Amino acid sequence: MIMTMVILIISAGIAFAFIPKLKKNKETKTIVIFSIFLLLGAALNIGVSLRLRIPSPLDLVTYIFSPIRDLIISLTK
Image (cartoon, rainbow, N blue to C red; front, side):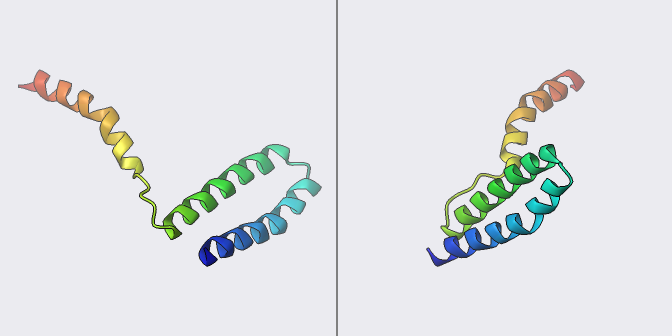
């Protein structure tokens, strides 16, 4: 619970440090993308601190490319 609060405080500090500069330069697209990545990173860090099982992106890549690999192997035999 304490780590969750620390992560949220750090994320808020990062947002307060960078978003005003981006607003000043009128970079709304950058603010949106920055906010999405900051929220995603904070959520993943909170999940890790709570010891949740977070699947690896490699699992998705393996799931997608396994049938293609099998097809290529069967064609080369």
